[in-house]
Each structure stands twice: as structure tokens, then as C-alpha cells.
Amino acid sequence: MGSFSENLTNRKVIRFLWPLILSTVVTQSYTVINAAVMGRYLDPYALAVIEACAACLSMESYFF
Image 1 (cartoon, rainbow, N blue to C red):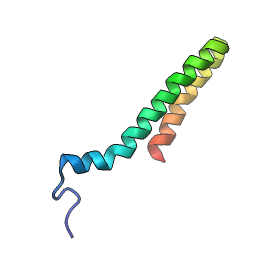
Image 2: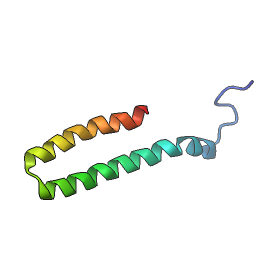
Image 3: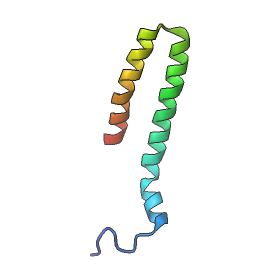
């Protein structure tokens, strides 16, 4: 049984990390679009709450 880093190539690393990269891009895009839409229709306090909760959403996507 070999170690994890044995015969490790850049292609294998990118393939392994692709789901994490994709989920990060989707989460960040969602946060920006959500802030733009809510900022247009709600008051600044509501936008502040949304942005404060964005950090929690990001942490959820990193751990799960």
C-alpha cells in the first residue's frame, strides 16, 4: 500500500480539488448576487445581516 503522495501529479491534484473549487466559486457567486438583489430592494440593515450570514454559509460549505 503506497502513501497518498506517491505518484502524485498536477492533474490528480486538480481532479481531487475540483469539487472544493467549484463549491467555493458557487458560494461566492451566490453571495454577490444575493447582496446585489437584496441591496436594491431592502434597507442597509437587511443587507448587513445578509453579509454577516454569508460567512456562516461559507463555513458550512467548507466543512460539509
